[in-house]
Image 1: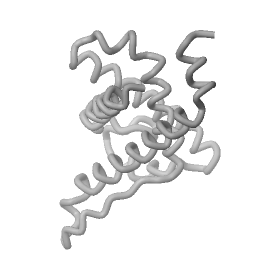
Image 2 (image 1 turned 120 degrees about the vertical axis):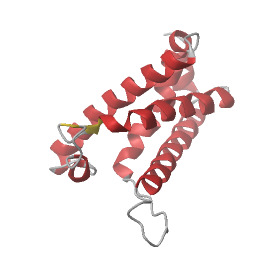
Image 3 (image 1 turned 45 degrees about the vertical axis):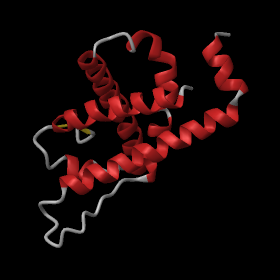
Image 4 (image 1 turned 60 degrees about the vertical axis):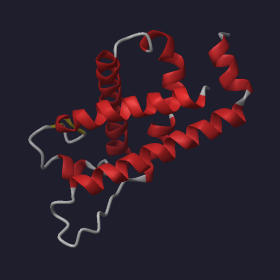
Length: 148
């Protein structure tokens, strides 16, 4: 068993804490993103943001993916890392939203995603690429600061 997997399995309390931290971080970033995105429509300027708890497990997997891929990705230039994270996030989102579609009949964001000409099967939106790029780099930064 390699050292990374061994650590994840033996220090399960730390692993769970960090996974929950990234889950909350992901949901929080999504709420901020949707509040800013919908600000033009919010005439009262309440900056209502939203997400779905169904996305929590997806965000909770981020530190595991970062731990397993850090040696390969961290030496790369900033732009390359951001693009890799963006592609990885889009890929995970597509698979997860497809699974939620099968489980629930529709993914939580499907109705709004289908309104965009940049949607792919109503499961992801390519116009969100800059946000995914940035989210990946924010997750990387937090992961590095934790020193896990």
